[in-house]
Length: 149
Image (cartoon, rainbow, N blue to C red):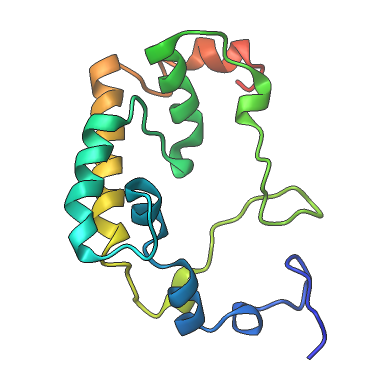
C-alpha cells in the first residue's frame, strides 16, 4: 500500500493504525512518562498519582490551553506572550485550523491506566484555578498583554 502522509486528505485512522495497534503503541503513555518506564501497569497508577500531586509544580490541560497559560503566569509570574497561545500542532496544517478529534473510532475504549491519572490532573488544574482565582474573566489582562484578547 502506498504511503499516506499524516495530513493527507484521504488518510483515515484505519489506514494508519488499527485500534489494537494504537492501544499497543500508545496506551498508558501518560502514566509511563510519570513513573519513568513503559509499559505502565495498574500497579503504577498509585505512584503516578502521588508524583502528580507532590512532584509537579504546575499542571495544565491542553483542552484549557488559554487558562493553562494564564494560570502558569498567575502562579509563577512573567509576561504573557503571544507565542504561548499559538497552536503549533493544528489538526489541519494546510489551513491551521484545529478541530475536535473524532473519538468514535475508539469504540468506547478508555485507557484504564491513564484514565485515573488524567482525572487527577484535571482535579489539580481546576483546584488551582479556584485557589488562584483564575478564570477567562480574570485573565483578560494576560490575554491583552499577549494580544490574543
